[in-house]
Amino acid sequence: MSTRQLRDLAGHRTLAANNENEDGEPSIMTRSIAAVALAALLSLLPIRAEADPIPPGGVGQNVEAVGYSNLDDKPGFKMSIQKVGERWYLYIGMLWNEGWHIVDVTDPGDPKVVKEIEGPPNTATDQMEIADGKMITALAKISPGWGGDPAKPFDEGVLIWDMKDPLNPQKLGQFRTRALSTHRNGYGGGKYMHLSANMRGFTGNIYVIVDISNPEKPKEAGRWWVPGQREDETPPAPAATHMHGPPFIVGNTAYLPYGGAGMIILDISDIAHPRKIGQLQMSPPFAANIGVHTVIPVPERKLAFINSEAIAEDCNEPLQQASVVDIADPAKPRLMALFPLPLPPPDWPIRSFCERGGRFGPHNQNTLLHNPFVQPQGNLVYLTYFNAGLRIYDVSTPTAPREVGYFLPPDPTRRYGVFPKGRLVAQTEDVLVDTRGYIYITDKNQGLYILRYTGK
Image (tube, rainbow, N blue to C red; front, side, top):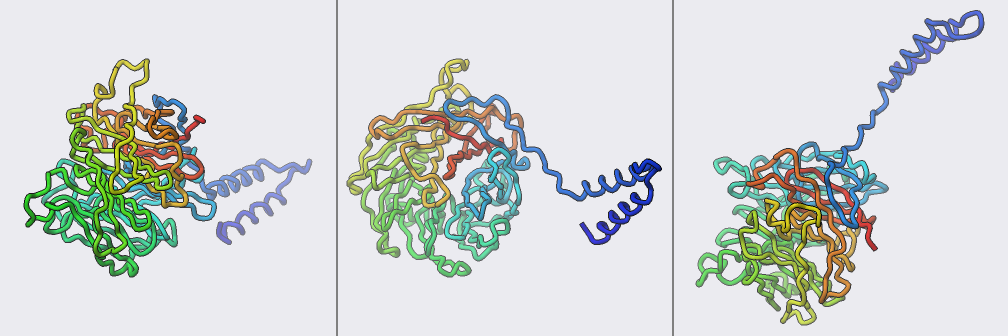
């Protein structure tokens, strides 16, 4: 409130004191002036908007919906999180728009979009990561059929941001591939970014290590690819050979989810010359397009949790997989168990999620385990499953994973993007679990759901 406003209100109070009736009660004129003054004061106070209501119709088992944000009608995709002071901030790459959301999730029942950062036009900005006071955001040419204009320019590579002010990230630099894009990149802090990058002269994304010790001038430090990906190599690699990412780094070992080439394990003690240690091929018999989409190694248990990504709608593709892998001998990783396929609730009219429409199959796990504000990997695996929502598995017995919870969002009521092509159904995308136990999930055509696991 300004000095003048305070002086005016003080003047009203003085006038009121001089306008009492014979009984010492305020006169009608005085009460009117006081009412006007109170209204003026209240108009200067911030009005707290109500929380976005949780859309009705969600179904869960051992999972409850805590909060929801429609993200200002701009659905999000990949997420990261940090706590600054007593505030919790969730950072989200937009899916059908260019840019990034910052959402205050300090009160998980009332998430608030507090900042929208504009991204470059006609560019996919849905992938991002935070560590060590920096944010890296992937830039890519929008894939054919995903809503971009192929005739217009786009930006590509990785933007590097300073996060000293959590609500106002500042651009530090940009790494360019001189080609089409980067995708699901990894950054656990320190000197190196670990990228899934489309580079000149290669077919499909490869693994690229970038030195950002000077973030204003990032420079490539090393790369690795499957033989045949370089355009002058014969025979060429199969079409499904591409590094999806993110690379998961444990010490001097990199675990790569490499699409149709499976899970690949590298020794990166010599950054300039990564060396292959082992590989587990999953395709065939499983779907090959993104045959291994995510790898979560847990070296202390000598295990890794891996999964593919469903692509075709209505299950018009080979079976997808989510699996437990023995990595006790990294040179010879072996399949131990498959996660059970999700089933619709017994009272639903469908017998299989293949009947629901859209994609059915695994997509993302709670991946960002280097982040001190993300729940460490324990006996629960959180896995998004597109039209089967969020699935939670108990892996305390790794040879017999079992489902212990799920959450099925209701179907969207508005189509924001071009997918799914068929029936407009829920398509759960990313998942992140913070150290408070709150679970965040995003959807192609809905906002941000905040959940909590209520099982044992």
